[in-house]
Length: 226
Image (cartoon, rainbow, N blue to C red; front, side):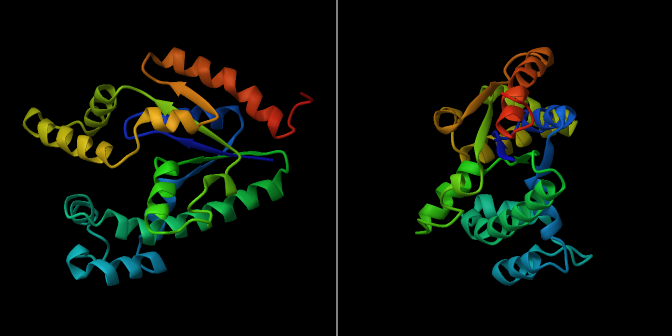
């Protein structure tokens, strides 16, 4: 078996890479989707967020007002508080899903798609956590792939996905820059990664890089005789 972390900043293209890896046979676990699920009413994470941030972050339907929560977290310096609630629960669920995948196929390549693999470590250590799985990604991941691209390309991709009218693009670009500012720069992530995929070019280039990488991952999970 092989546990792979796939990461990259906002707009890097990691979701596209994840889809390509899935087409090759990887079991892809999306951290963002898990986080969204756990932040729904009925989950302990939801209850903890409401207790920590107050009823002001609830929408009329009783669910989280995610834009309001994001505004508080990013603009009021409370992102660490939110992450301290969400990250441990997401990582526990990731572990459960990976174990289920390996039970089905001991030679599986399980890919965790997450924007914040390195940031989880940074934030845990900033809270004084030195030894848990939050403070050392190597305790839960065997290999890390970082998808990189220049920040201006990332921002353009992020804003382009939103299909906004021209008068709202500037605000979206500012939001993207704020989010990138909270993430570790590509150069620092690449220095710690096992594999780096450059997504500053076209889709064909990206596909070729993923196709070249997949046999190496598959070999490490004992799916090939290499």
